[in-house]
Amino acid sequence: MRNPPPSLLSLTVNAAVLNLSRINDLSHLPDHIILDLFDRTLKAGKLNERVLRLFMASGNEEVLSIIDALKIKIDITPILPTRCHEKFRMNGTRR
Image (cartoon, rainbow, N blue to C red):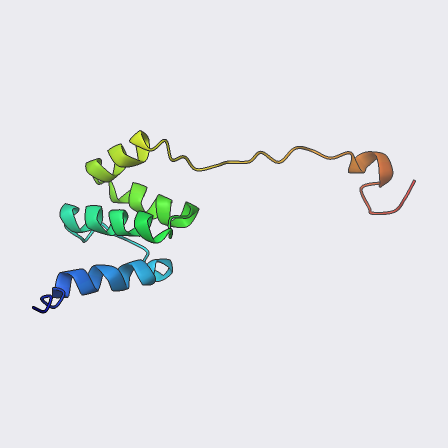
């Protein structure tokens, strides 16, 4: 017995996961599709900072609660000042 063919929705969500870098806005999608897209994105290992921000900007409450439950956070690494002023003058010449 053969498996039934995948639905058009399933094929579309799979294509969206493969092309997440080209998607800028999810606000026009229904909540259940955003949730399915997020789930497949996690399973595919495609979640990065940009994609996470995309899903967070969607405002989907279920996705936001999953992000919170999994303790996924955007890492903001502070840039500490260096001691370049001790080696160089402001015009770039050595002391």
